[in-house]
Image 1 (cartoon, rainbow, N blue to C red):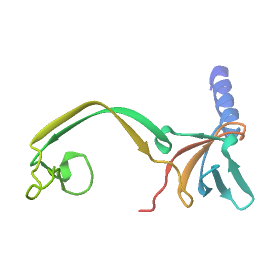
Image 2 (cartoon, helix red, strand yellow):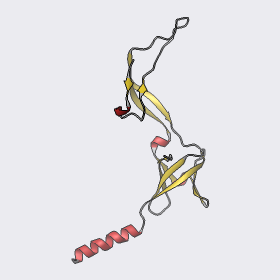
Image 3 (tube, rainbow, N blue to C red):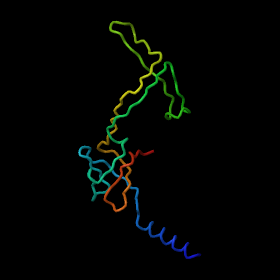
Image 4 (cartoon, helix red, strand yellow):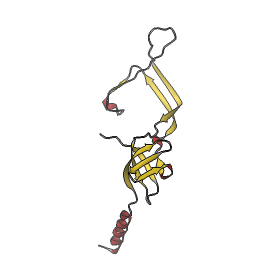
Length: 142
């Protein structure tokens, strides 16, 4: 082994021994203000947390395209079951609902209300130094 290889290996081992990040799990014990318990002696408060945007209330600009009738099967990469589009409109005093045929909403503002709630199980990454934790996602049991 060359001196260069020995230096590289030593540097990698030193880096790995510092545990730059750790994956840990926690439970939301309070939604507002946010608190996450990672074990009985450690509860993290908002100032120690970085939260992925998809776990917060946030807005997006979207385009919605709709066509009736339309059915997507399991192989359409949109879930684990067959999905059928459904839409209807009613006019006051009209007979049963008349389905929309086709429409598109462009540049529509949509608010996602995907905030963390008490009891949610979450996966976190402890950043190097252990003073900040990145909340990656909810965890569900299979």
